Amino acid sequence: MGVEQGLTDADLPGIQQLADKTSLAGQASYLRLTKIRLWATVTAALCGAVGLIGTLPGPVDHGLDAASLMAFIVALAAEILLLRTRPEEAWYQGRAVAESLKSLAWKYATRAQPFHDIGDEEAASLFRRKIRSVLDVLPEGVVPEPELPAQISTGMRELRAAPLSVRITAYKRGRIADQRLWYARKARFNEERSQRWRLTLLGLELAGAFGAFLLLLDLTDFDPGGLLAVLVAAGGAWLEVKQYDNLASAYALTSTELLLVEGEGEGVVTEEDFAHYVVSAEQAISREHTMWGARRLRARGRPQE
Image (cartoon, rainbow, N blue to C red; front, side):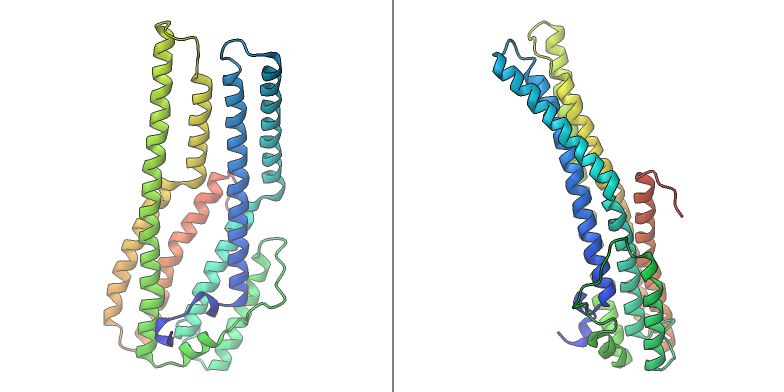
């Protein structure tokens, strides 16, 4: 692809790529352990519910008790790992660093503030100082890879050296349009997932009400209420973790805002206008992520610093 396509992920600073990988690994670990804990709890409840179905042979009854015990142990182990390793810390911190450095790289490559109207060597020196300033906020345990890419890539240098018209096209296409479409897709995805989970929880609650009705009429001796209550609680906990509703609203709002930002770029014709335009657009992009990070911290019950 030509320089007018903008910066690719491979063109971004090595520390940014490392922070991005750290964030994705932390997210995967956090969601995996959370799933294990919830499924283990549901399994324990299922074993208890099955044990209430009539009179079971001794070995079967003991097997269910053992399975329930093991499920609780697995849930406990997952919870302990979550508390000890805190993978959500790497997820949130890594994402914050990655997004900050991505924004910084675009500002450098497009000659926006604070890299506007200064020489290339001075801009490169300033960029490296700003990169160095974020090392203190990298998640704990992050070790740079031996083959870490350069902090100022060839793609960043080529875009910075390109004519104004090329930089404008590259920024609109590779940054604004790319982010707008990403947020729009994510908004639809989260909205669909939210509706799916809400309908699932509604079905479980209706099943619980129907089961209670049958018990009231003495049409059955089996009470699935406990199991269904655990399933509803687990589903609600997963919704709280994923925050589908909040993310759908936030992403839709950001996508709309970026659509407006994209339109504002039509009047950009000078270096000065473009430098201010990039800063304004980056503020719009970073605003949602700052709010996202704050929501995640509140969800974990940690005070913001």
